[in-house]
Image 1 (cartoon, one colour):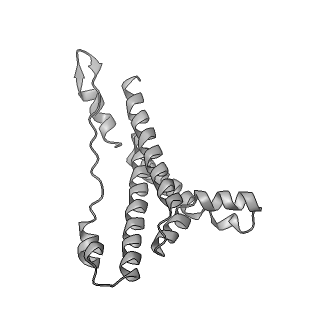
Image 2 (tube, helix red, strand yellow):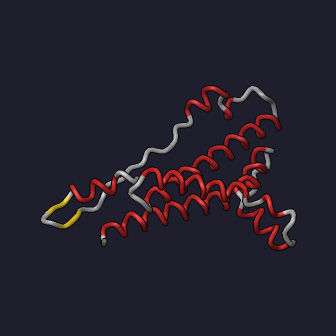
Length: 158
């Protein structure tokens, strides 16, 4: 995303910068499914197949959150190094934010656990597909992509 900002200055029509066309390619999970087996045709009977399906769903949603946050941080700057470091810091913050929850108060601890990516992912890996986890991942993904869209659109008016 950082490199696309340089293309805006080149793509001009009548002296007015044109809207950048950004089509980021998402992650390809075919190698994960090929290496670990297809969860839909698992040879494991009953509950074990559902555990595997929950794990794959959790992994897919976590990776999608990582990509959405990465695209968001990359849309804020032209420098790729700054984008990578800010992405790493923000994802690390979302990853470890539940650690001080045990020493915090009851309400603050519950809030820190809810904001943490790992708490929601851990539930899905156990096979518990809860609607609160799905809503959390959907909220993070949609919010990050919405803010990315707004950031890219703001370049047009600068």
